[in-house]
View (cartoon, rainbow, N blue to C red):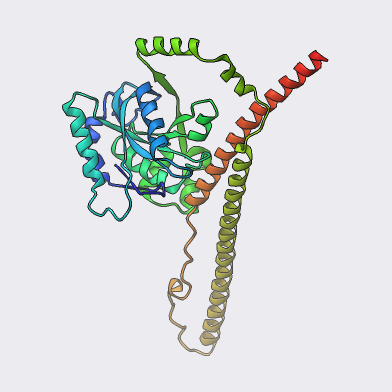
Length: 352
């Protein structure tokens, strides 16, 4: 289970506690070769997630919570959720795992789905591809195979379109995380790139027939003028903010590349020094042999030349994945704005 840290969005995991409900969380899709092909979410869950952010999320503040539901064949049905409570690190007496177990026990008493099927998290301009999310999702998915993480973007939602996406770790990344070897050689052997880290699962939001009728009635009563706001040509700061975040991550990637290049130069330099040492050693032994003296004893080169520690490449993959997310956001935003500009140009030419 993920434990929430106030104000950071980081999550610490407790695999033993998650494993306690893993057996209950698996349905027909619990075999090792199964995969979740679709996520079905009740409308009530979506409203709870939105309400949680509106009440506790401010700016870059990240809110998180637990998803409850069941697995039906290759479909994951999310029927309920509850948030992680707000608290600070000063609250030493608060036990997050115990809180989650008490919540699920209470839901079971009132005959509500209480099986743990994942977690959700809000994001700030799509900034969710982090090591904390990777570690938490690995802990969930390792214990409960069908687990997903829902990423809710309140900024996109405020612009008129609900932004809610479900992600899972790919099987390749799960194997690498199990081995805990993030060296360049291991990632190259596993053929892991930033495109093969997360897989998006299609989402379907389901409501009861009564809710659909109510929404249809509300749509008829809604003001027509509100719909025209989507056609506004005014550009918000969404594009500028995404570009700024993109530049920051590109700078991080540049620094990471410098570190890796430094490691490669140092490795090459050490190999040259090792080769020169071996040549000198061989020449000395030949001279000693010509004088009839015994050769020098062989020394352990690993002690004389300690192997350099290669930099972990997982952070680079996460940065590349986050850059790709920003680029996709910019692409979607610019595509919508260009469409409105071309439409406005056509209307202006028609009126003239």
